[in-house]
Image (cartoon, rainbow, N blue to C red):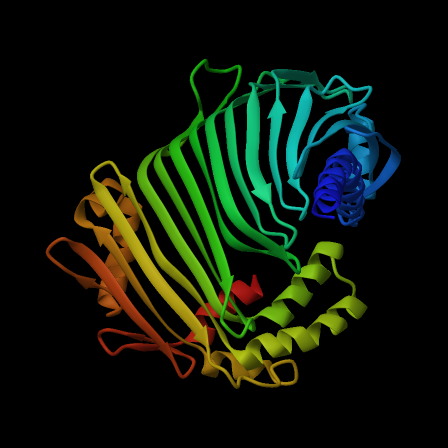
Length: 420
């Protein structure tokens, strides 16, 4: 009896091993089918054209079609396809599926390699070989891209990581202008949730330059550029906070050279449901009708009722030996209700502060700044220090209050802009 049990166990194990690739293939087909189904959106539709599942491997063909009319028109004008067919060779491993995918009937040298676990988690690598393309719409534009890649992983819960490496892009216009970007690197981790990104993303550009036929050197150029974005929901998943940081080593413009530019901007305590709804409405209709504006009003009401803040944590730069730095913050307190019925409630509810600094050297180098500063000092809006000039302002009770005690109604400053 024990011998029969042992033989049965061995036979069962052999049968399981023989059938396992079929099981992996079946599970893999379900994972791939479900994944393609969820890829479709308002801009792109996705469908499986053919799924030929074998014992140790499968061949899958999927079709992706542009849905956005404006994007379709642009692609057609440039003689680009609006429908893409992807052929994938899938291998059935012991615990995963390995796939190599490429575009069919196109000269675009893009390939995708993925390893998908049976639970749906996927590691991916997207590689673009050297690519050159010239538009055919009468306004010729040549695009040159060096070999580039994006690598990362994505989970069944939508968590995504990526690493971008793009050594260079060059755009040559028929009019002689040229745009060159080099040393592009990026990375991110997070999740796309209800229309906005939750997590961290960053991108670095070693050099960006614009030149024309009039000169061989760059007319506009910046080096060592870096952008970092982060956003998160609070523990109750009801408030959104985000931060944007831009750093640029140096910027060459027709007006001069700016160095060590930094901008750090935040917005927080934003009602996530209202923000999501407004973003969705704006993305669908950037130019909103009166009816759509009426639909958006309750969400705007909710934003102000829950309160939020906007803050320029710092904005600073150097021009030659001159320095400039500024920080400000504006807050709308919770409980600012019925603003659509009475917009006049907004200004009295706002609180905030502003701190701005101009160095002596900056004012010396730019006389037009000096004239404005002299007037501000006379009006007790700015004070002179040993190192330069500083303005400190508080916003309260719909008034701008300077450090000298001088007060100016906020509306007095806003009115010229509103009239214009």
